[in-house]
Image 1 (cartoon, rainbow, N blue to C red):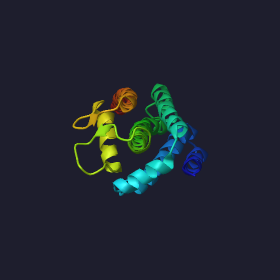
Image 2: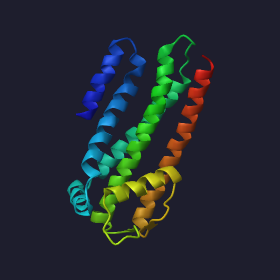
Image 3: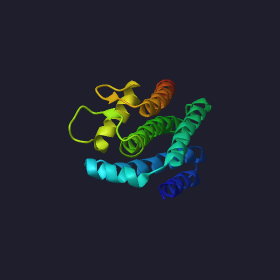
Length: 199
């Protein structure tokens, strides 16, 4: 449903004369809706609700992988937009660069959200523990979000302890993926500044 709504928005932009923006608008709208839905459901959950949802999700490895592949693939569109020649009088090129930055940020947020949900599933379903949150109360989604976004920003954990080989492997892959996104964010920012400097 989110992808369909995104495609409608992207199609509308393409019809009014900016087909180059179709992917960016489609992706950005779809990801924004997915993120809003995911956090609306998960953020307010206590540890019991978190465990219940994690158990209901069960084995969603294929879905996780598909989303992560799509998020990484979105970086290819970003690179293409940065390499696309545009004149000083081409507003579509400038908008594409700005939307590229939005796309990278949303894809990065989506990636960390997927890992937050994955850490919850690992903790409550597959590994049954494996992360020491240094608290007596069992963790909720906000705790897993803290872990995921810390790895996403710092490429490692801070005050939490990863006490499981399985979770450490997942966190390692997560950190590498986040480093890739960080590199692209810098590249897009430089491209945006260079583009604006030519105007």
